[in-house]
Length: 216
Length: 397
Image 1: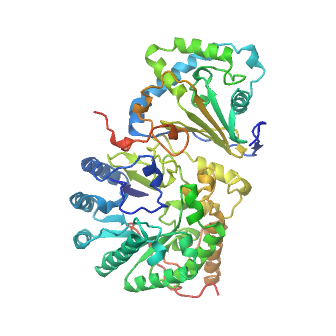
Image 2: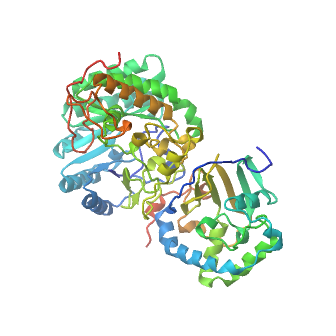
Image 3: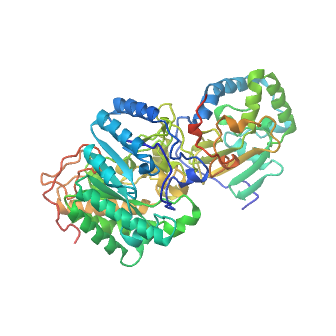
C-alpha cells in the first residue's frame, strides 16, 4: 500500500478498441437500453459551463485527470498502491465519463470539489425531469473504473462498458461510491445483478436468475 | 462455434472447481423447473437456421431436468438437426436414457477426472458418497460404451493428478476404455474461481507442461482416437483449424466460439469467463477484437504475447484462464502451452522433416504420409479427413 500517486509504466503501443457494452441482465437491458442514450444526450448540454479557477490548473489528458482528481479527494482509501476507493458525489462523478455520463465537462481538482459540484447540480436541474432521477441514480450507483494496457472497463451493477484508454501497466482500479445516495432507492429492481466482485457485490443476492424475471 | 443449451444450472454434484460456482454463489442460477422449453426450442431453431450449428445440451447437469422435458428437447434437436449431443457428469444415466440416446443418435461427453480418487474433486457431499458416485459414473460410462453410443471424456486436470502414480493410473484406466471403444476426449486444466481453491487444485505452469507432454506421448499410442488438446495442436500447426475456440481470438462480450441459450431462450456469452458470477448477455454491436489487439502489442513481461512465434495459432489462449482472471492478459498457463507447441512441433518435424508448419509462414504443407495425430475432431462436427500412416511411431525418443 502506498499514499503517493499510482505507479504506472506507460507502454509503447496504443490500441484503438471499439467501445462495447454488455448488459448484466435481461431486465437491465429492457429498462435502461433506450433510456441510457437519452440520458447521455442530456448530459452533453453541460459543455458550455466554465471551469472553476481551482480546477483550471489540473486539466490532464485522460486518464490522468481521473487519477489526479481521485488522489486529491479527501477520505480516499487504498487497498493497494493502484487500487483507490472513493466516496464521491454524483454531481462531480467523472468515473463514467468514457461513456459520456457526467454532469461536469471538466476534470475537477478533486472529486469533492465544491465549485464543480455546484456546476453539476445546476446542470442536473436543467436535465428534463423525466430523465433527471434516472441520471442521478446512474451517477450514484457503485462503479469500478478498471484500466490495463490501453483497455478500460467500467464495471457497473447494470452493464460493463469497454473503451480505449492510455496504455499503461499494471492495472489501476478506482472504486467509486456515493456516501448518501438520493435517487438510488428501487434501483435494484431494475436489473442490477449481484456478483462476487465490486460493484456487483453491493447488490443483494437474488433467489432467482435475473434472466428469468421476464416482464409481465 | 458451439451452441450450448443451458436450461438449468442446478447440479447433483458439488465440484469445488466448477466454473459455474461463482454464478451459484451469488444466486445467478436456474433451478430444475425455471425454464421455458418453447422459447428454448424457438431459439435453437433460429440459431440452427442462422449457423447450421446443432446444439449441445448442457447445464448445470442436464439429466436433472425432468426426463419428459429432456427427451422432448432431444427429440426436437434430432428432428431439426438430424443429430443430438449432450454433456453430463453421467451420474443419473439409466436404461431409459440409454434407449433414447441410441434412438436419437446422441453423442455423449461425460465429465469424469479419472478412476477412484482421481475423481474426488467431483464432490458428492462426503468421502463415501463421492466414492460411490464415482463408481456409479464409471459403471454408467462403460454401459454407454457397451451400448455403442458415441461417447467421449472431459477430464479436468487438478493437483489430484500429480500425486505419485496418478498419471499411470489415469493412463491405464484410459487404455482400458479405449480398448472398450472410447473414441477420445479432452484434458482441460482446472480454473478455480475462488482464491482458496487455487492452491488446492491448480497446477503451476511447469506442472501443467509436464503433464501435457506426458499425456501427448500417451495419446500418440492411440492413433485411432482423438485427444484434446494434443490432436488440436497438431491440426493447428498444420493450418487445419481445429474445432475448438481456444485457439482463436475471443471477444469476451460476444464470444464467437460458444453461444449459450439460457433458460428463457435468451442468448448468453460463454460462462467460463463469468468469473464474477454474471453470465452477461451478448454485446449486440459489431465485433471487438480488443483482446487480440492488446495481447499482440504487449510484451511478455506485461502479460502479453508480442513477438511470440506461436501467436498466429495460439492467440493467448482462452480468456477464462487469463492471468489474474483478467481477459486483457494472456493465459496463466502460457509456459505450458508454449512447451506443448514446441513438443508437438518437434514430433511433427521428426516424423516428417519436410513438413512446413503454419507458424513458419507461408502455406502449411501436409506431408503425403500424413501427420502423427488423429485430426478427427471428437464432437458433433463433421469428421475431418484422417491421415493415419504415421500413427503409432515413436516420435520423441
